[in-house]
Length: 237
Ligand SMILES: [Zn+2]
Image (cartoon, rainbow, N blue to C red; front, side, top):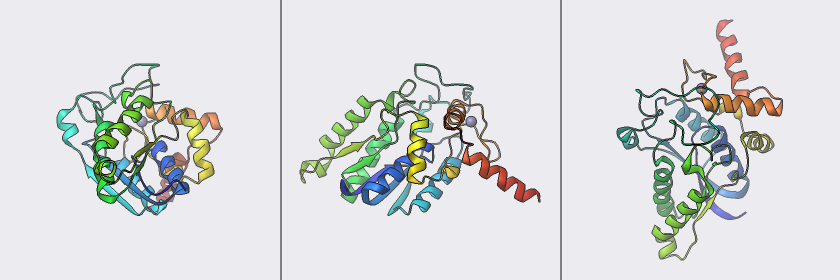
């Protein structure tokens, strides 16, 4: 047990869900924060709610940061921009990057932590994201930790050190799922797709492609697709 309490940033995807179950093993009291930022679809937020409930977190807050939609500059918030299809490019920022999104999430989480007296934050950032998302790199996570320690009263008055945990920093998607299966993560309730249609993932956007590849590498069907197919059959019969 590293500490009593922590907060996990929970998007509803594979990485943050695994981070949540990773945290449940290590902290007595786990809080979860989900951010809405004017993203095209609210489906991932519904999945995050379900995951938080299944994990039995002490508190789950959904916080609105739709200012990011007003600023725009991302295919996830600006409907005039197309969501890319196919694999992630080998390197370079992708149009689904949302400018400064993770930095803003980290700072808002820092405010929540300060009020709740929480010194530990867990992020699901990992190696597969690093080539395309600047705000998932290890140097970004270290900078966030430095900022939270410099700006928070927990560090200033309380002499408490704030720690940013990135347990999956050297791991790829398939490694994360392998670990998560041991931790009991309900992957049938995780959402990845950037362009869902009628509650189904598109199967073509980079995150769908990456997710499918990871399950294929593990020789497993995607539990989300199994669940959706089962529910569809139940409706039809
Ligand atoms: Zn998709």
